Image 1: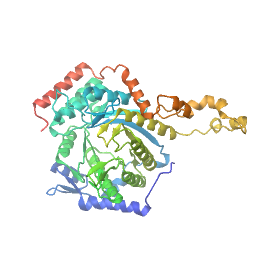
Image 2: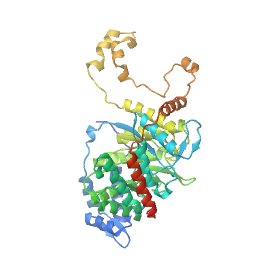
Image 3: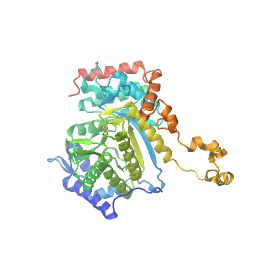
Image 4: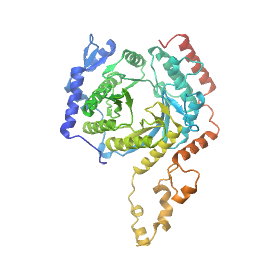
Length: 470
């Protein structure tokens, strides 16, 4: 069993747990829908319809935790992966190092870079980082699906406006027909608790719409320490835990099951300008706490490691991403790094994707299972080489070095004289060269048929004509 990093005593874990239960019972959660309040009340909560508030008794919540699917931490294997997420940001041109608005071509290029790197598990699109000339801005949650599927990404399932729900369902139904898969398998919709302990009316309406159609909508939360949580690490952990428990209750009330996982805190407020920062150490302190609470509950844990406040690929970006990756891996045992993002999701950098993929490959190699066998123990090899020898000439080295030694693509491997004589001095230069190689090849054909694209555009046009995004 791996040894995980912890910062709390047993008494402190219990205090944070008890405080989260107190918040759920005494403060409760604002749910801006009478219908959803009634569903939660029937499930076991204590609704206050006039105040639009739901509360949960501590003993009832503890029973829900006890009934959750348990995770065998003694058998846990460390895992590290990365994906490329594309959000409402700018494109950092790798040739000019100039920030530009996204366009259709640069979105396609960005997705191509992500898909070309073996360390990247997937590429996802949340909304659309540009407004096409054929669709108004409010309807980009619909266009998100079309462009994601067309260019080889997957949609992160933006909804935003309740009036778009029927059209989102229709778009996924048409995609399911095209791919020959069940609608429930391809469907996605997501929302957020945008302010602490409050499920806004729009998210309630969307949840209820999709629930009535037998479709699942996920609800997440990303808190900002000092802005949407108390400024203390313990207070932020309490609020995050309370909201996580509420969201688990909400999922079970609507969809059943016993799943519950804990992790992924959020960001940190900068008091000088009231903006959120992703590369600060305080968010990692909360991750340490939540990871320890998850192990005490006996449930899964995991978090992201790719946030940075740097505005360009730089030592700041590398250190923030590496620090978060190491701490979260030590605390939670599972990390998914969001590659390419800078300035807390405001900048999408193809070059940073390459750097983050290199970091991912190095960490994946570091945590790979270590095989212990007569061959790998190498006792005979040690005896054959003997004192003063070199294992460079060993048959074992020749046979195994390609699998036992990680081969970097971007990080330097040259001796100093070679490096001085080389024209490719920096890792940034090599990353840019890798991008040029990827984009020099012809782009793939669209990943969807012309018929599907035509039909999706027609659905979006009907939504616009119906003024659905109001």
